[in-house]
Length: 212
Image (tube, rainbow, N blue to C red; front, side):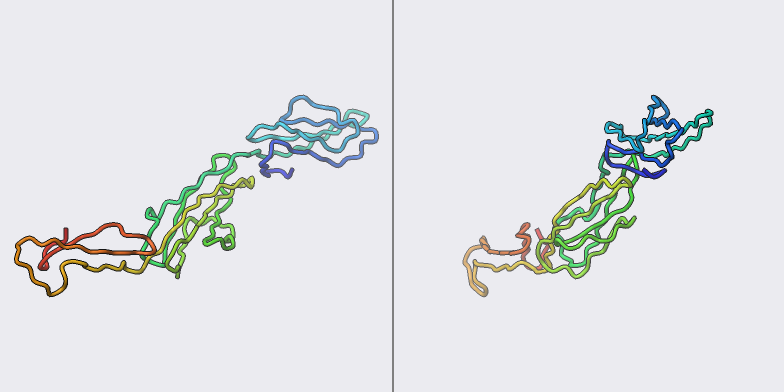
């Protein structure tokens, strides 16, 4: 790997270039247990733990001169975390919606975020924590935001927003408008429908009084 790079796998290969004629080449991970390359030009470690590691390789000529090279990299196989902070409501009465999110990664760090809506293309990866979606039509809109860490691990936060800018349909079914009654008690009945988000509840008032 390149020095200062990141890996999202426990299996990593060290390769080198040298002229083995008349030389002894040895390699090591984290500076322990030096191994004779025996003419090989690479070696793969398959059980590296998460965290920082340093690959070492050294060449020793026939008179004992030594040259050593090393690269340090970070193994991170754990996905970052991401949550959508807002909106907290999933049903909104506005076609322009600001979405905000937050993510973290305590190993290699966050490289960037992406988002998409209605199954469209992913946005370019960037270190942004919000986006304004405009002109959304009434109805459900599946949305996903994802975090990508420096090792390439991905975490996604999906949600479905429903836009409903149309008022429900409401009608009073009893008593009839302009009708008469000979009682000081009147029962009022009504019906309502809302095809997009559904009816959340009802309130009523009489003679311009307070809504209940």
